[in-house]
Length: 460
Image 1: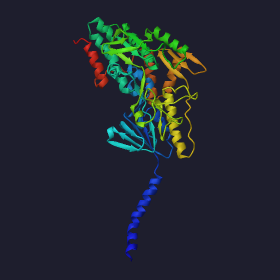
Image 2: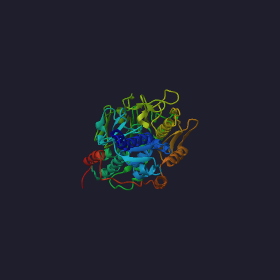
Image 3: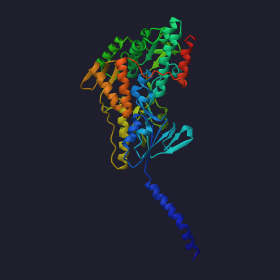
Image 4: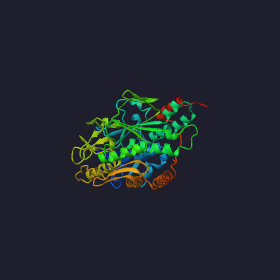
């Protein structure tokens, strides 16, 4: 046999292997990486359930949190497990999806890579859905966060619950009336839904549920102050409903102050202009700041750091990258009004991102995002709520029952729905709270809170 023919025979297995490798690469299913397991990320993964793709969902925690009820965890009405569901459980029947617990620290849109945990590992993608949401904004004063916790995650809710419950324990041990008053004064900054719901639940809980449990303090003397920088609360609602909510809060004993801007926060006071309000408990519910990952995308951002997306929710110059939920800003059909940063909007945008990926794979045109507002609800307290469905506005007991029904309906998992329903029934008929646990394991915010409370209390 000639030498050339022999070499061709020897090289044929290598060439065949390379050809097989090329064909396998050509048959490789597109890789979809979803960052964030909240409302938007979960819905995107769900929409891609039957798509011919491989999905990797990454989240820094292992659970999906029902954020609209975080304030009830913070005020000891619900346990953290009542509103949290493991992401792996949610996607357990989705064969094309895997879940990784890790923190995405960088996105390289040119290399199509997502870096995890400071660059220790990375993931390539064909399509990327970024749904990392937002955090509370302190308007240029990040040092206030250790003193005035916000409410965006279960860790935030636990920290706030520790402060809420510890304040009364410290007041019970103190023999200084001024300290007791400061410990039993709760200042909530921000008159949006979270601030109003917090104010509306703290007042009845402290006046009813706690009143017979302490011997040296009268919890009915608890003060709840709601500070709002503009001249109305609940800006997403019509004036008539916002005014109704304002009256309900004041009937509950909440001191609502409109047009009041916070100028300083210290461990023992809040300053409004030159006025000093002695308090050891400041809860932050004012303003949002988008996740810092939006900056890695190299596209225009608004003043809150939100990514300005195209009509199909992709980013300019990179049709394979979608940004959904609170991290993005898009307009309603009128082209002027921003889509609100609420759970239904995040779910709808996540669903559309998944649908547009499928459209690409099937050679169909993408669809633009059309936000459908099913209605806005806010609860102000026991038997007090407002609801706006556009064509009809509801207040009072009926709105409150609607609020209960909707929130039970949207919770993930039967166990969570049943648990929350039983806890709410128990709280309604007894005024008691079933999750009054002060955690001794503290995170950074917990440590600041516990130190602040400890310095105000008398030992022994």
